[in-house]
Image (cartoon, rainbow, N blue to C red; front, side):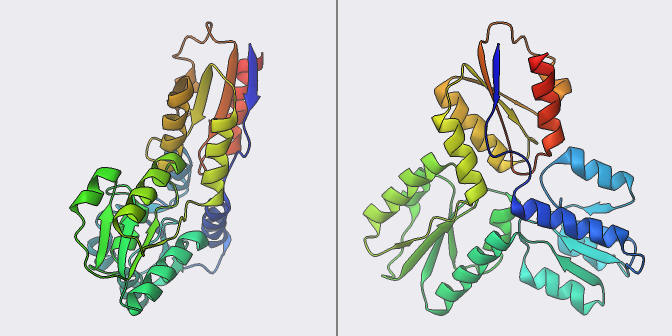
Length: 281
């Protein structure tokens, strides 16, 4: 059996930054306790559960404002996927210690959308329904048109000649190319701004260019970018999507000769190495 690790692996820059902010807060003796994560800081329950064991309190990302209303003291760390500015401002006005761990790349998307809104553009945002990153963007303005797949385009009825379109950072490069092409056909003057992040793009390209008869994707089930890797892998050959080594052990791998391993941008490298070392024994 031949086993190879596809590159890149481990945390992306945004995830590293978010976890670093949390670690700094935990290690700061002057911090305002308790520490709350407003929504899962990153989409990886193995890592989030370790922080819960350290006393960090995780707030439901679908009910942020109501939960923050109940908090009288402490540090609030907002998730890497981005959050409604109004909720962050509300927490600050309550006198709570606020740390915004939004990925800088996601921040760029927020700022560009705001800039185009000021110029009276209609905004078309491509994302996944109910994903934290999409919800954070849609909170910017009710004037944002949301689509999740190519079939949603026919429902759009925009008369404005000024249209700007961008996307969630963790979508499939294959699907997004088709969606943007269809948008360009419907709205000739549209400004297309592909904002799939570099970490996502490189991982997807590695899968597309790799040869394997089985792809193992290591990632949390709520990780959008991990799911996209699995979907792309399935287009080429067999693929499985697991959290860790324990899940892998449930599979019969004896029929495979060429296995490739990839992982999501919020998957710690040690989980990948455990799987790799198990397979090469």
